[in-house]
Length: 177
Image (cartoon, rainbow, N blue to C red; front, side, top):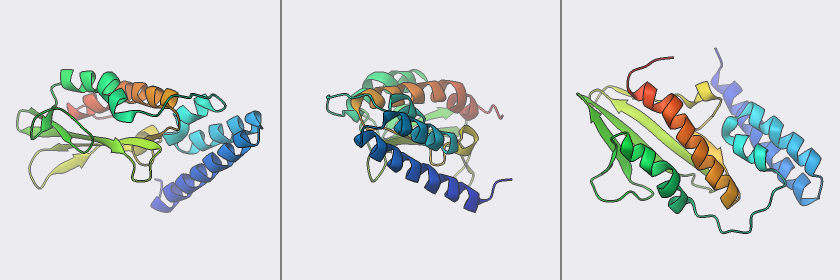
């Protein structure tokens, strides 16, 4: 059993390594930058997408919400989710679906400090009984994936789509690992 202090140590160390990687890339040492980001990703999958793109440049402006609407939202809507209280999805809006007496909830958004896009997923069997998806089983400390460029945002959304289909939707439907 992993203790919370171990998780916090890994989270902290992976962040440090990502910063060192950025510094190495800025100094032109791409091989070292890649090595550091791969190590960060091994400790915390939050950095897995960034590890794949170290050294690549993308001059496009980062456009997270339009990319979410294009890549992720069709899959989520096809799975029966709708925004609450209705209308189109935008950041900050919860998506829900009902399966019998169970409500499935999905919240997507960028982290408070930027550079990460995450999800909070839960199933409510009653007001008092709530289960949240455990991101630790995917080696993700906070249910977030990091990005810096539009190319990385597109890869992050593609990765979230895979995670939804292979892990989250089956879990919501009652399949336990």
